Image (cartoon, rainbow, N blue to C red; front, side, top):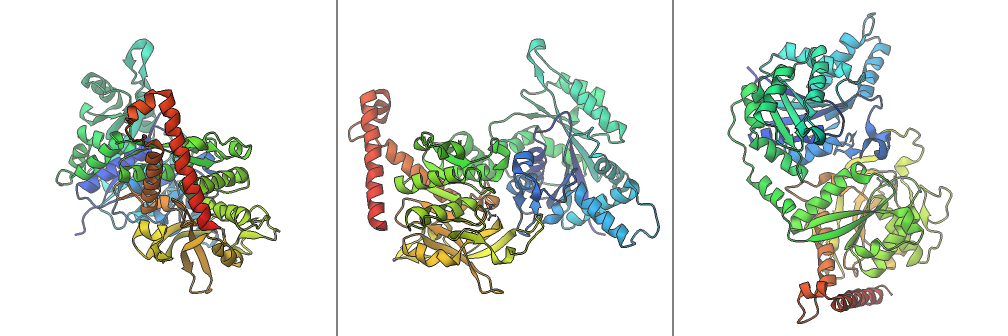
Length: 587
Ligand code: GLN
């Protein structure tokens, strides 16, 4: 008989943003490290068919998978914590997708005259989607988006309630993440919000098996017992989910609490202890780094934390690879556009990430020009690469009107133009160039390895995409002749058209743009090569800038104002030297 599949359903209570995705991903990581074949699923209770059309400002970043699915940002967490699961569009679905499927089937006459209802038709469809997503795994961890008590999530909760009855208690576990706040005035941890949240769950027939209590201090045995009493479960099934410095510490802490041991006991799975040594070493490099570098991310979103989740994680991973902490400074592109370069001057590397729309683009280009002419390491991703090409066309090639068709559809000098495959596309949802495509890397230029090749060490790579516009082949020759090297390209065998995937300036300390999104493939245990290389270059730039004068100790340089001035002079000299050698190379 086939092994019985097991399910863990993760719900959240009290309020959002208390880390349900990370908690679910941490459980996945611990069980994978115990040798269980794990997969993960996210069910989101909104009506958009997928998050692809939603503003990242509203709902956080859109995480793209190899198959081109535009998914919830939690899929990013799952991908960074669980390594062997192959996530596809099946692993992230929404109420919109469920209703779309049911309504299409109804229109096709698939319900044979029945009245189509939330129970059982919508709940059956949810269960079908869960099973479809979890085929290859022994254990599926399914996270329900939103907070218990929301009207929207009720059909999902009803579906998982039914699954516990159908599959049995030994095969289905309900994990509930809740908040236990410390109230300073009473000098006490308060359990009432948790009690209320569990009461809501029990009213709809779900008794949590495990409570993860997010808190800023460890729960005492007494508090656990009180929660257990009011929430109808043994205190041994109540766990502290304490605030930690790095998200990658969460699974280690939950393991200390023996959460994974309790889960395998409840699900009756026999597994060895997890091997966490590599993970611990990685966390050690994050929490105890050897130095700090500053990366400026030039963008337009006010709240960029969730909009650029994978990006900031990939930068952290690049820091792990180079044993430095990467401090990320958000630089408002509109401020730069208005001429304020002060923040740019305080950083070791400039990153212009992906984006859509015209707002802030001139500021981003000013930042790129600054990095290019000052010899500051620059990394442009998707829109960032497109703007680097436009900036180069305008300021080095003299194509003054250079622009993108995204911002100037009728422009005569659209160095960035609509892709052939996008012409005539009307619907916005799911229609960009999405997902994994191969890219060929140029290994050498003028006898020297390209930056792209130096990073990857390979001539064939595959990366994930999400864009409509591309580097126009009309301008490629002219721009390449002036020194912007195309170091990565993809030749579409169907159309014979070659798409530019990577550009770089060979004479610059590190200036590289890519049309794809490398951040989606970076993992804490295997940092992405481009992020590692960018952070390495930025670290070198920072060290050059800080190198004390001969015979001078760096502490003194910091303590003594005139020495500080001299050190600043050295930095300027280094940058000027770089600038002139670069200009020599370009002219
Ligand atoms: N807006 C640009 C395009 O659609 C860039 C997209 C992106 O940065 N993801 O091509």
